[in-house]
Image (cartoon, rainbow, N blue to C red; front, side, top):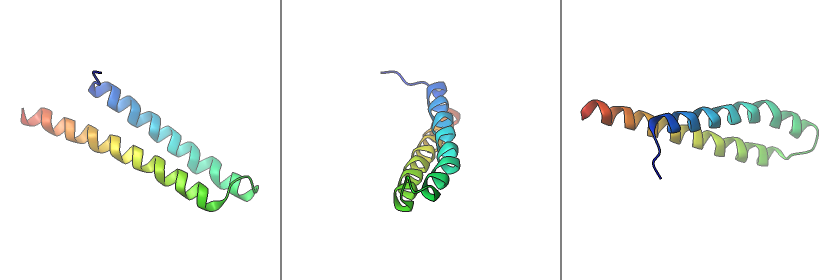
Amino acid sequence: MNITETDIDEMRRCAARELSMRLLVYPKRVIAGKMKQEQADFEIAGMKKIVDYFSYVQKTSELQQKLF
């Protein structure tokens, strides 16, 4: 599998959109009793880790390109 810098950026942006959606939707689901706060917190934190990971990979890749 050959993952390009463009692919990494696309995955990061997709995960960031998903995180934004969860931040908007999950509080409403908690208030409506359709989701427990603990589950919402867990799911939001998990997606934030994914966004942070792709941001880290992207920055690391950019730094390596500058070095070489």
